[in-house]
Length: 330
Image (cartoon, rainbow, N blue to C red; front, side, top):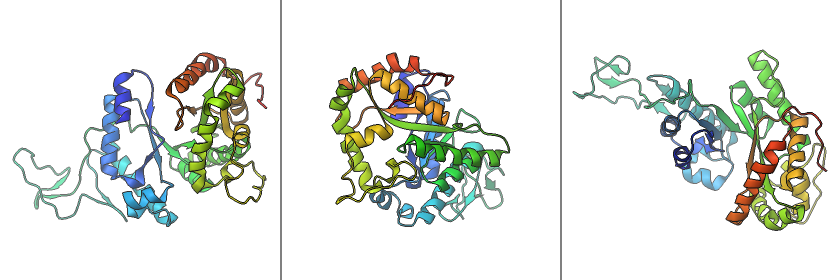
């Protein structure tokens, strides 16, 4: 629904999600909703997909997606995506899998206003053999698909199945390995030399202010509180550099403070600082797609809008597009 609202208010921007947890949804309904959004937006949709990470959501939305059984969750994810692609690309389709069977067997259909066709019906028995989603997406064969990934297995699987990827928390050094895994798997799958950074989008938490101190004062507490929520399940391991050991502490989040986060993965600071950090990402990773987020829970709306305006006016114009003369931010 937010995508439809954005589409109605805009003419050029791409409209995406990060992400649709497809294991929680009926794949036909989700495919239809996304196709309709793509039509309404004039073909501006990017589809973000994921498997889910929070058990309390999974067990209440779809018990088959329970994350206690990772292998089963992954099979459900794979099958759901397969059905969505069929719905987008085939005029009529059928599917029989571990979790879903479409159409439901032994269902007969006869209606004077719906002439029988061998495309979808056994004309002798009137049993429906295939179904269809209407409308199809405007983009052909379907909108670009971006999978939220972290582990090596998911990264490789995305590359092998022609999906783009979205990454979030890791440091630059840790991201380098993930970018290389995706590049190598995609190169092998597509039998071509894929450049580092192709097909990857990076999410970074961002807050731009006139001074470093103002950025911390306005947004520091709120990003820490948000990360406490996230890291309650994830822990802090994703924030560490390769080979860096997580010190033992009394509680697993004792290390979580502003200084710990800021040097690892935050774009918090002056326009100059944020420009340098982004150029570092471009230099080290050949980063081609960056998603930034400023409206963390608790952030004052006006402060958030000022941050976005500073980013638009004073950061974007100064990003090095050719990766030349890049200065690393300390």
